[in-house]
Structures are given as structure tokens and as C-alpha cells.
Image 1 (tube, rainbow, N blue to C red):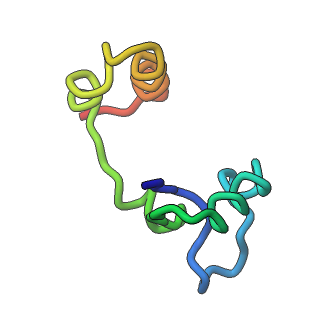
Image 2: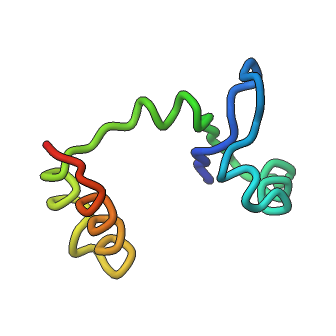
Length: 81
């Protein structure tokens, strides 16, 4: 199953969104593929996601190069508990 946080809801006035505009061929491929697919529109989906620096440290940091990278950018952008 693929979960995608990107695009905007159909009622949104535009779809100028990074994940959609960054690679439209990949988005088209996923949308047309015969796979289970969960879509979380970026404009409302990202607003619902909440995580503290402590949660990032416990659940993300130390989980490989990607986890360490995500933790660093989260920390370095000044997110607090």
C-alpha cells in the first residue's frame, strides 16, 4: 500500500503543491497503478500531523541515515515541544 501526503483537496482553488508539481509523472504512475492507495491532501493533511522534538528524538533519530536526517532538519528548523 502507498500513502501519499501531497496534492490539494478537489475543492482547493489551485494545485500548486510541491509533491504534486515536483514529479507529475510519478504521481500519474501511482494514481493509475493497480495498488492500494491512501491519499492525504497536503493542504489539510499536513496541518493534522503533529510531532514534538522529543517524539522525533525517540521515534526517528537513530533509525538509519534517513531518520537521522529528518531529525536534524526538524531540530534545526526550531521545532519545540
